[in-house]
Amino acid sequence: MEMVPLTAIDKADTGWVMVASALVLLMTLPGIALFYAGLVRRKNVVNTMVAVFAVACVVTLTWFGLGYSLAFTAESPWLGNLGRAWFAALHFDGRRSVISVSHLAPHLPEAAYALFQAAFAIITTSLIVGAVVERMRFAALLMFAALWSVLVYAPVAHWVWESGGWLNQLGALDFAGGAVVHVNAGVAALVCAFMMGRRRGYGTEPFEPHSLGWTAMGTAMLLIGWFGFNAGSALSADGRAALAFVVTLVAAAAAGLAWMVVEWLVRGAPTLLGLLSGMVGGLVAITPAAGFVQVGSAVWIGLIAGAVCFWGATWLKRRLGADDSLDVFGVHGVGGIAGSILTAIFADPLIAGTGATVLNQLIAVAAVAAYSAAATAGVLVLIRLLMPLRVDAVQEMEGLDISLHLERQH
Image (cartoon, rainbow, N blue to C red; front, side):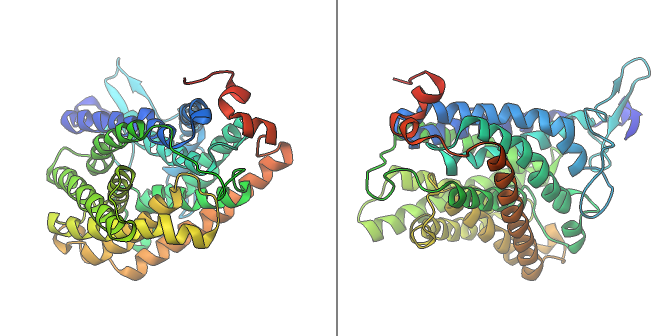
């Protein structure tokens, strides 16, 4: 931990990072909560909302208590130490006019940097909820969120974003979390879906979304919040942040149209859910590339992502056979993999330098996916030793809103 005079802090950049942190938090609360709650059946709406909000609360405490230190302390290429654990780095001494800063962002108060990274840990863990909705025990979910955010998310963030992390040293490019957030969460979600088993009636009963209007509102909040997600990752109010802002919107638009057109050709009709899913897929794919590509490249990344994510959420999902309830792997996992590879293809050397290679990106994707799969399975096995992962058949049939929370949305 380093203490610097208050005069060393860039006020404009600090203000932007704090605003960006709020935007990223908006993606989860209520963005993801609304997006997911709109897609589940009426009897599980409250449970889905509670799950996302509760996971956000749990991860906030695990992040500042332990995860931040493990992710962003320069200890080894694999993992940080406990030097910043339990809020140890978030110091402000008004009498001496000094404040703590991170070695990764010495122009910002460390509190602002840690907050920005906390918002990423929160949304990454919350994304996994979409794979286990309508059947996971609430206590098991809370335990999973606490363990996963520390044992899976924090090490991966260290590998990629800590200056001494091994994937960072390799030269892998991940501007805002294509691998750290989306590949990580997508693969974890797929593992959870396999280990949890399918929902009762899956494949034989229609699982109609409760409210596509809620999902549309959630998507709008995700889009707005994603500007903080990507442009905020510049950690400065500068030209790179502005470029990341623009390419984020362009990729989302291109991907939404691409998914819609492919669906129109394949199924004979464009759908609202398809358009929304495509936009999210484009946002996912541009995430690793946002600070490294020009606007024209963002169009291609979006078009490719829209088509690839449609394939991931339809054909690939059927082939895998897992009940990934809300297509977390199909959109976030597949979109994150595609975006990570496309980053190397479209990265502009004038912005990203000349070190980007497809091989490095493939190594990063494979390493993150393998670790996430193995560690997520380990976390679930550990929890299963303590309690069942699933609710019982009666609770699932009745719906988790009443059986777990004694509440109804309607």
